Structure formats: C-alpha cells, structure tokens
Length: 102
View 1 (cartoon, rainbow, N blue to C red):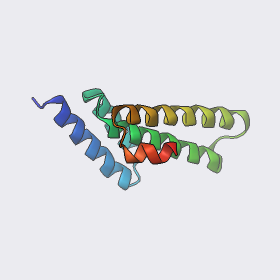
View 2 (view 1 turned 90 degrees about the vertical axis):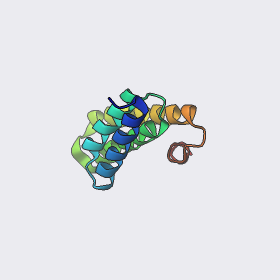
View 3 (view 1 turned 60 degrees about the horizontal axis):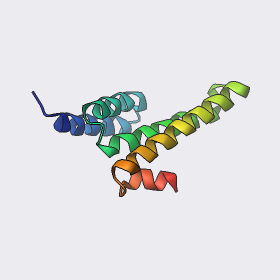
C-alpha cells in the first residue's frame, strides 16, 4: 500500500500530464484524488483554481447565455479564488496561486 503523500504526488503529476494535453476534466479528477489522498499538498488546490478559471473562460465563449452565464461565471470565479487561497494557506510560496491571486 502506498503512503498517502506518495499517492498525492502521483495523482498530482498525472493531473498535470492531462492538463498539459488539454484534458482538463481528467486533470480535475486527478487533482481531486490527490487532494483526498493528502489535503495538505498545495499544488492540487492551485490547479483546481486554474480549472475553475478554464471553465469560466469556456462560459465566456458562449456555451451558456444571460443570467445562467452570469451565475456560473460568478460561482466558478469564487470557487477558483477559494482554491488559490487554500493553496497559499498551505504554502505561502505557491507561485501558481500567488500569480493567480495577483
């Protein structure tokens, strides 16, 4: 049986591979599994925040319209911000989250 931290790292890097290949939904699944294996591993939360921003961009492209689009955009932006804040709270030097939060 693997240690939780080892599984978290494995899942994180598998998620990154999916991310780099543009398979964002598959990446999200791996980041969530990694966070479950070790909720103190900050990179997962930074990339979950990036996933929220990716979804927000897709909404802006016109997959939804009107009020639904506004609500989805607001919800995903808030979720993304919470993920970035969690990453920073776990690791103040997390570059991805720090850049995203500005």
